[in-house]
Structures are given as C-alpha cells and as structure tokens.
Length: 550
Image (cartoon, rainbow, N blue to C red; front, top):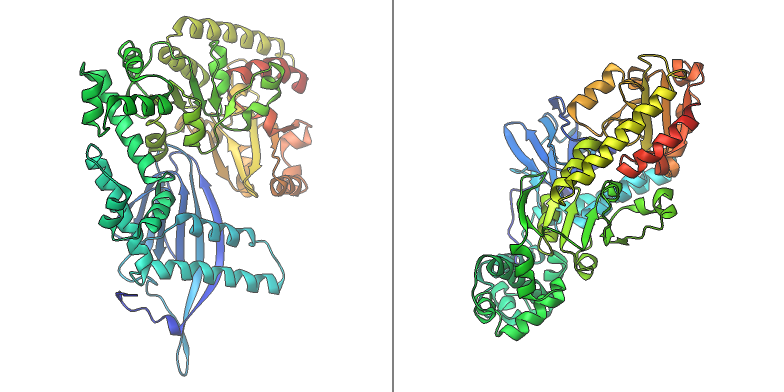
C-alpha cells in the first residue's frame, strides 16, 4: 500500500496519559471566555453549529468535526443561534521518553493542523462515548482500561491524519463521484461508470457509497432526478415526456412510476397542488412553496400539541412525547419517524408538508428532498408559535380563538391562586439531565407556564436567560443559589445517574439552606410529564398547577 508521510511525529518515543474527559452541552447563544489550554486537548463535536477560535485561526463548528490543541493555545468556543451545542472535551499529557530523561512534549500531536479528518465519524464518536462512560470508575484496573480505550481513540486519529492511506483515499474518491452525480444527474450514469471514476471495485464502491449517504447509488440518483423534476413541474408547462428526459429518465412511464413511489402522487397532480400553494418564509430563512391545504403533515418537534390546538393532526412525528398522558387519553396516534429523522420512514408516509422544529441545515437538506419542509422554532413563546402555525396552515382564526381562550383561562387560574402566592414571589425550575449536568429552565418547558403578570416572577439571573431567548442553560451546583427562587420546582429525570445526582444535591447543606427548602416550597415532579411547553400541556397545566401548589 502506498503511504505518503506527513510532518514527522516521534510516536515511538511519546507516551500519552489521559487526564479528563467531559461531555459538554451548552445552550443557544452561549459564548465561552477566552482561555489558554493547559493540556493537550481534543474537541469532538456531535451537535450544534458555531465557531472555534484557536490562536489566530477561526473554524466553523459543525457536527462530526474534531479539533486538536497543544498546551498554550488560546481558545474560545461560541455557539450559534440554531440549537444547543454538544461536544466531548478530552485533556491529556504527552511525555517524550529520552535515553537519560523524560520531558513534556508540548508540540501539536498533528503538526500544522488543528482540524482533524476522521472517517467514519460514528466510530470516533463511539470511542469517545465508551471513554466517557468509564469516567467514574475508581479502581486502578478500570483506570488502566480507560487508558487503553484512550490509546485506541488516538490510534484511530493518527491512522487518518499522519498517513494518507488507501482506505481514506477511496472514501474521498467516492465522495467526489457524489459531487459528479449532483452536477450530471441528467445524463446516463451507471454504478460501473462511477466505480471506474473513483478507481474502486464496484462492490466496494457501493459499500462506501451507502456508508456515506445511507442509500444505494442508483436510489440516490433517482432521488436527485425526482427533486429536480419537481422544480420543472411547478415552473414549466412542458410535457411529462420532456421533463422526464431533462432530468435523466429514459421515458415518461418509468418517471411517472418512480415519482409515485417517492411522493405518493402522480407528477401532474403534484404540479397542480403546488401551483395552488403559497410561498412562506420559515424560521431559518428558507423561502418554501407549500400546499395551501396540506393533508399529510409530518411534525417533528417537542411541541406537537401546538398543532392539535389548531385542530390539525399529523401523520408522523418524532420524540417520545406521544407517551404523554395528554395524548394517550385523547387516543392520538402518530407514526414515529425517529430521532434524528429516518428518511425511509418519512418517505413511506408520503407527506405533503414537513414541519421541522430544528435548525440543523444538514438534516433539513435530507428531508426537504422528500416534501416541502419548513423549519419551526419550538423554543419561541407560546403565542408566537401558535400564530406562526396559523399563518403557515391558513388557520389564523383558529389560532386567535385558541390564544384568546387560553389567556382568559390562565388569567382566571392565577387570580384564583392570589391568596396562595405573594405579589412578586419568585420561582425556579431545575433538572439534572445527561448524567450529572444541572440545568435551569428558561423559555421552554414548565418555566414558560409559571411566569405570568399575576403568577410567579423570575429571579434576576433567570430573567437574563429569558431575555436572551435561551430555552435553558447549564449551571454549576455552586451557582444554584443565585438562580433559586422563593419556590423551586425540581424536575426528576428518568436517567438513573441524573436521579442519583438529584438525591445527592438534596442531601447537601447548601441545598437545605435555600429559603424555598426551609419554607417547604419545593415540588418534586416528573420531567416526562411536566416539562413540556406545547399548547396541550399548557392547557393541562392550568388544571394541574393549582392542585400542585395548593
């Protein structure tokens, strides 16, 4: 196998010693202070978008990115405003073994580069997950095993970045053919031809292609052609035969059959529906042509109850929200399309509109090929969400009617509780999630129902969170008193480690010294029932909150 050496790293004389591994989750808009790294550090990003400043270099943060820093590097990470950011931070020491003495090695372990190439990222992420899972072991033997796991992770990174090996070369070659397909979909393309372009055996080409796209090459090509045909169907009056030819199909009959398989309707029917549709601008700025009266909606987000408030039901959705008693009691059933969205399950439901409560552009590109897709901010205030859906679905009257009714009932509830709540009384909502990570809730979840002119007020530190539009932020246990109100609503996670962290916190002197604890104003409630902010849950809370508080 041909290998090209990069700048030499004296691996045979280097020892790598794991120091820490953390899984860090930060909210929308979070910005870290500028700091100087004390150790060699790896950052492995799995969720969110933003920027990372390393010395004088600036890199765009995206899922499946990895970065390496030597000691002494200046660092700042900044999240964007799309979604929370999630990453692993691994710190370690490197020791160079000499003939007579050993010294610290402070050079970058991957010379001349901070951004690290890895494929498949899923393997790197799995190695990081395994390393993090063993983080709490106390025994010497288990820590020895931790170091072995760490060596595996480093070895994987070195394989891809210190040598340009044939395996990685093959993957890049197949990626290049994907770009070729996107530009030349209208021509006759075969797997044999693509494999030849990539200089990879056909059987191996298909395997790598599926790993990269999740689809077989010809299925991917068909999807490309169908998506381009949709634009022609909407914006031209050309015969079906001409459109089929323009996008690469041999005849209109095969085109018609494949179009039906992918969308559930015939090409001309699709054109008619879309021409009767309207253009809307979604949360993240896409201009999308959608049907005027969609019949098969997929709603992927945690506020499905907003849709129900307008009398609209979805054929598919995500999250385990459907297990909530509110939906079970109403006999509401929605097909689960997975988290993240499973394109095959989504396509099988033949939607004519997808409402996607996420700002992940990569995911958006995948699902918007299936049906018109609009992004939706499920962290926005209730009234804004209902009005937005009313505009998208031509349900403005229904939206106004529901909001007027809800406001009347909410005002009535808080008036009835005036004898139980002092003017200006504050409240806070906390939860441990993702293990031992402590969060205070902001614009989303239960807290969004508590803050009302006649109800509870936020403490100043929580008001800052609300003003920033953050759904929640992570805090340290030491900072908790700054966020604690006169009443505390402690949400109980189903995660075992999070439950243990909650129990441990409530047994500390600092917790017991909080005014809310001393006065008996702490409410322990199940997160999977109480911590939602959709319209149906908000209505349910109007009945349930008084029972809890009284």
